[in-house]
Image (cartoon, rainbow, N blue to C red; front, side, top):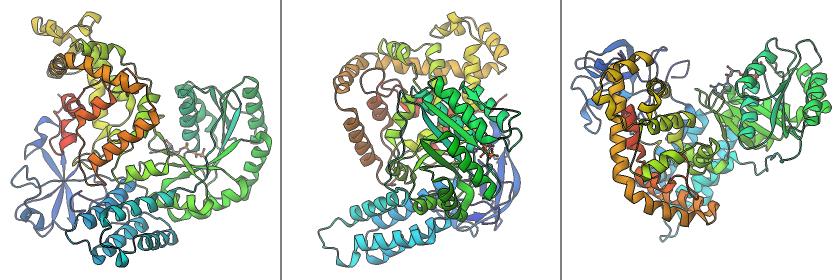
Length: 615
Ligand SMILES: Nc1nc2c(ncn2[C@@H]2O[C@H](COP(=O)(O)OP(=O)(O)OP(=O)(O)O)[C@@H](O)[C@H]2O)c(=O)[nH]1
């Protein structure tokens, strides 16, 4: 389980086990009749994959709680095939696992018919164990445990107190305290040159994160640019150049100058003269905390006098994080931390402990290699999300930052129309939003749904791309049509299929999805007008207050890790489209679950299932 092996878990029973090292996301762990160990199977990725014969054996596995047949005897698990009993396996993100364990412990304790001291203590032990396993510093865990015990003070609780509420609130508050150093992070000011310098060990993700951050500020209206002061690693400037070019961000660096402080000064001076507002300086890393690295860091700091120094910490650093952060703090006195690679198998707790050790706030977390994989870190929202309670404010901010153009589609839906072009626009908007699993994590209750945790982002993204290719192979007239011309002239389908490199069947599927959505649009046409009026009336008020009220309402629907699923249709209606304080990501009244299902991602919403294979 620990040395390079995988951990399996199912949401309901937290099953844990050992598996082969080459196990991968989406594999099935099955009990086969007549055997007493479980086996890992892999789907072939064809339409027949769901048929009993559509899988191949990878190797055996040991999963506690199912290997002696307990699983088969428990009829609360779905049994899609009589002789194969799959549980969803995935190379789980450990932070997500940590969240699931904590909310599972809370859930078990607070749902117990007799919430006695024993149940409370066992919940505390489970939470502490989960935090320790995730590499959170042992002193911090013990402090958290004591604090919860003291605040709840189970023995002397007056009978009138709502124990469940109190426990939930205390655990939540203490987890927030763990990641909140109560220090205000730096905020760049418009109309001024804000110099931000990055420091960190080699490979922590500095160069990647510099570009992500520059893009983040650029998307929020700042004139952002990048300076490469890494003259130590061959290829560092090329990497920054490549990233910056892709993100359309101006950059500065030198292939010949060897003094990093000189390059940094030249770059910063140049961009200050050009009135750039966010100037990000990337520095070099080393394998270890070497004195040469620290000296270089101080020289660059002296040369560019940054307004903010950010330390980049790899989430997988584990227990060394604290010592490393302390050493960097002494040398470079950084004012903020960015934790990268939180999407990996890292435990993340070490990096979280670094916050407490240096009293420095985490400002962002890196959640993938893509340019958009940077999330603002806010302690309360982070804990909300960790416990599966969603992060609505983050979701709205994320979608708003994408500046999605919805006007045409919303106008169409109001008129009861949904063209193929509308479908194409929606598909590309969904692509811009980033991985669906990430979006799901931000919607209260959604990350707790069966199937969500193991959602295969690569597969859904490639499916979306193929659908966009199909649309891109159509003529303007076809795109603006209601799709009927394809039924009247089926050769059009063959032409589009050839043009986009897919089968005619896939074109047919896309058209039937568009037809289904057009049917929904037709039904919604009339009611939309009234809804927009209501939204406009709401749009004038205080948005922060509305946001807080919405978050509260959704939480009460989702419950604290209870897995309650908000009504997605009403959620989408609340977001509305276009007007007032609505979220421009989804057309008003669109049922997200139906929309995902219609796009062939229904399997993700309900677990199992799986989509149609490619031909
Ligand atoms: N999965 C994932 N990978 C990341 C993330 N951030 C960075 N990476 C990857 O980590 C690797 C190292 O990132 P770099 O940006 O080159 O690291 P660096 O700190 O600049 O390295 P040096 O310049 O050698 O000091 C690259 O392959 C990045 O794509 C993240 O949040 N998630």
